[in-house]
Amino acid sequence: MSELHKFLFDGLPVRGVLVRLTDAWTEILQRRASNTTTGAYAPAVRDMLGEMTAAAALMQANIKFDGSLVLQIFGDGPVKVAVVEVQSDLALRATATVQPQVEPGATLSQMVNVRNLGRCAITLDPKTKFPGQQPYQGVVPLFDDHGHAIEKLSAVLEHYMLQSEQLDTTLVLAADDKVAAGLLIQRLPMAGAGNLAGSMVSKENEDQIGLNENYNRIAVLASSLKREELLTLDVETILRRLFWEESITRFEPLVGDTAPRFACNCSRERVGKMIVGLGREEAEDIISERGDIEVGCEFCGLQYRFDPIDAAQLFVDAVQIVSPGTEAH
Image (tube, rainbow, N blue to C red; front, side, top):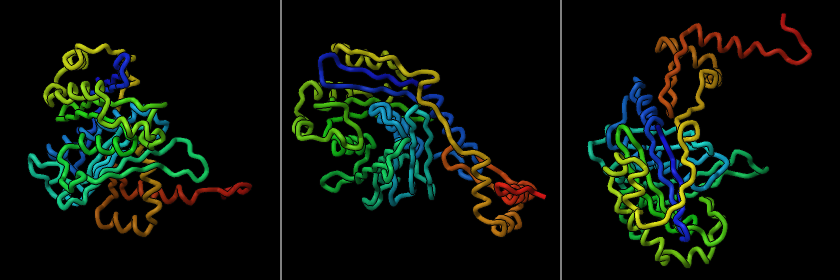
């Protein structure tokens, strides 16, 4: 089962989060593979999207944001866009739009940053908005300060966190066809709890960048975690191997119903409303050409089919709306 663990280093300004997505991740992959239009992800795309999914779960859990966190990578390679959405209760979904075929072993830049046009965006969309309030979005390029392409998603997100919060952050990410996992280590803000919208950005935080010896020591230990270890070892073993000399306070792990889990809000009703929005004439043209209307959810891969009778009924239902105070005859 998927699980997420939070912990603090006693007496030190350092916190950590470790996530292992198992059933949540394989559900995403199985749904994609069963979609007859798209088919399964190429291994390189799968691993990149898995790392994104683990990273988004880590960030949402770390900031306790009441709303959705959306992590996107888009650019000029065969992967046009990859998106992960995580709700405040850690319900998550992920997808990638890929054209054409991605070569085995393709790197991050080969997939989304061929001519250094790739970008990473993080959007925070509050569940409850004030009048006129817009979602917060931060964007960083997929290259470093010298214009060199960054090949690790973890390095891109570390750079983002440094810019948005002025907080040192270390990320270790890994994914395969069974597990998407990640470890986040972060220096605590000087005051309050930081968040991705940058509310804790301050000169005090900025002045501490790279200088806290305790954080630097723990970051080195975290960075020694190998991909194979993150994918195959249980949480207890990972924390013991990395931080056996440190005193750690563990919080109640999120497992079972509280753990990160796959969820998609698509429905046949929503798709039906979209078809009605196309108009009767266009819907009939599609049915005339293809025999039915088929719409696949880009996030979960579920395909909705409407035969001619189903489609006709959509428009009958749409016109049977009776105005208040009147009766249908």
